[in-house]
Each structure stands twice: as C-alpha cells, then as structure tokens.
Length: 169
Image (tube, rainbow, N blue to C red; front, side, top):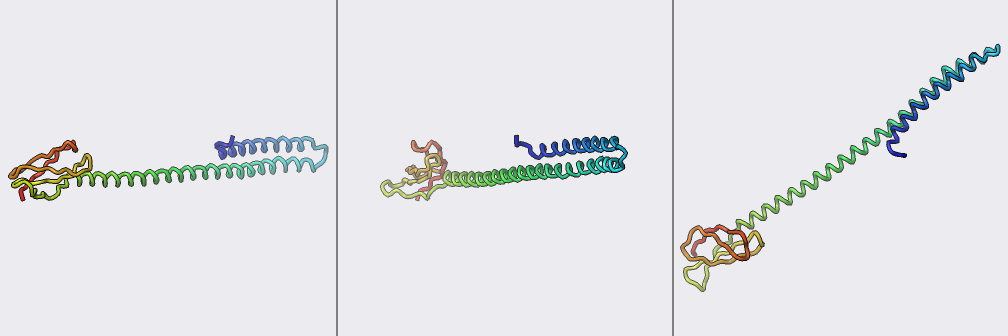
C-alpha cells in the first residue's frame, strides 16, 4: 500500500490533471450553452473553461513534482546505503587481508625459524638442534650425529619434515 509512494503520487497527479481539465471543460460549456440571455454566464463559462483547465494543470504539476522529490530521495537513500555497505565490505576485506598476510608471515617465520644449535654436554661430538614445528606451534629438540651436513628432522609431534643444516659447535 505504501510501497513506491512517489510513483503513486505522480500517477494521482496525472489523474487529477485530466479529471480537472475534463470537468472544467464540461462545466464551462454548460455555462456557455445555458446562456439564458445573460452575458455573465457566457463570460463565467469561458473563465471556468480556460482558468479551470489551467489551474488543474498547475495543481497537477505541483503534486507531480512532490512525487518526483519522493522518488529522488528514495534513490538517494538507496545509493547511500549501497555505498555504505560497499565501504563496510571493503573495510572488512582489508582487515581480513591484513590478518591473512600477518598469519601467513607468522607461519612462514615459524616454519623457517631455526634456533642456534646448542652443544650437548652429555655426549661428545653430538649437537642438539631446536626447531619450531609449524603444525603444532611447538619446539622440537633433536640430537644429530656430528659432521652431518644437510639433514631433515622429523618428530612424532610434528607432521612436517623440517630441512636444516646442523653444524657441530
């Protein structure tokens, strides 16, 4: 009932215009043809015919203009809300992108972070290595034979194979 009110007001203005013009013509012609010998009814009929039609048209312009204002304001509100939603989505996307980049950077740092080898005091010639596991975010400590160069460390705690170079200190 109250949806598209601007369009309904404009349609009503057009109906009022045509009805007012038709009514003015009918009443004006009735006055002109029912003259009864009086000059006043001829003038009154012409005035009603011309002025009534003109006033019906002007009145409909005002009503139609009001309907157009309502349509324009509805479009502006819809445009504003759409723009506001797009800005919120863009802001949320930016926040998500930054968080994703930060998480990826932290994951990459954890995956490639190798702590300095620590000499194992209990076993001569062996080196203890500590590496962060990217899967479980935990520290893995392993002892490897001295003199090895490229090795891959594995642990039951971490499903990733971690390549590293172990040096004897």
